[in-house]
Amino acid sequence: MLTHISEARVSRRGFLSSAAAVGALSIVMGATACSGHSTGAGTAAGQTTLWGLSGTDQDTVIAPSLKDWNEAHKDQQIQATYTQNDAYKTKIRTAFGAGSAPTLIYSWAGGTLNSYVKAGKVVDLTSQTAGVKDRYLESVWNQGVVDGKTYAVPMNAATPVVFYYNKDALAKAGVDAPKTFEDVIAAVPKLKDAGIAPLALAGGSKWPELMWAEYLVDRVAGPEAFERVMAGQENAWSDPGIIKANTMIQQLVDAGAFVDGFASVTADSNADVALLYTGKAAMLLQGAWVLPTFAQQAPEFAKNGLGYGAFPAVADGKGDPSNIVGNPSGYLSVSAAAGAEQQATAVSYLTTGVFDAAYVDRMIGNGQVPPVKDIESKIEASGSEFGSLVYGMTKNAKSFQMSWDQALPPAQATALLTNLDQLFNKQITPQQFSDNMNKTIGQQ
Image 1 (spheres, rainbow, N blue to C red):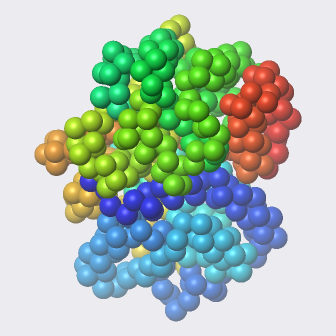
Image 2 (image 1 turned 60 degrees about the vertical axis):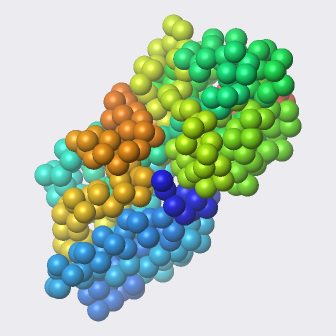
């Protein structure tokens, strides 16, 4: 099982604040994009540096990897600094503005990486990584590609959003694990009659609501609907599939599917997870990152009472049932301001050190799912059924859509969560949601 539960949760919540940080970062970089090579932390005394996140990534991914690397490469040493998630975004923004960014830069890809590329702050790695590209699952690798060129390489676990359920709660109500959206709707009155909330939802945190929108839009309209939003097409949010998906959300609200008072339930306190393992709610849509919380707070339930699977299919929908949403991985880029020797060391580490055999084995041993090919047998040997599920979902996904609040520019991401929360609380209609979001297209 995964360890460092608080960090696993924090890593998801870093997304929107990361986007907000990038908004300010873009302003800073606009003033410094033509300033030439830095003489700060990334280039001082020829030192190759890496900034990463403390917690799980530090303990089970980067630190042991760099220990191996530095022992084997005396002339290509890499010095790492680790920072808490939210503090990292402030630190990296300040470093870019001061010309002191590290050689190896951690990001969540999406809007963050796009900003780096636009400002000319990261190296085009297309040719250098051509030999390792096929090592990775395509749906994850592609998140580091901007305009057909590779600027970032995956470096940690794949964590798609998973549909969890309480086996005993469903059995008590005489309900099978839903395979379709229609199954979910049909289960609502049966579960309510049994005194069980059908769906846990941490609406007080807003971002968990986004997972419902992402999956339903994908299942109804296909991934192309959000791709048109990302492309900045006029009135892209008015896609009939998006309006239908949001109507389905309000159908769930009207049916009383979400736990009473969901607008006050928070994810950072793990209250949504607790509703499931205490049997107060039957089902939960959350990221793979919450499994450690189940394991720590309710180990017996995690072992015997917890069920999980893919998000239900939608009849006559355009989206493939294999499509997933969530966090493909964390990513490392190389600073364009670093010296030639530093860049060479960084590229060498990304292509031969990241996800080498020891790297992969350590992650699997800690319950994490590396986004690389041909490791099914290793995950099965670890005894992790959940790991096998997540790996299979990631490998077989025809589309792995990054969480929208990370993929979109910060101004649009902020408006998205605000309008989505209003949609869930019946303060606006699906059409009003689309009208409001259309006004944000093109905003940064």
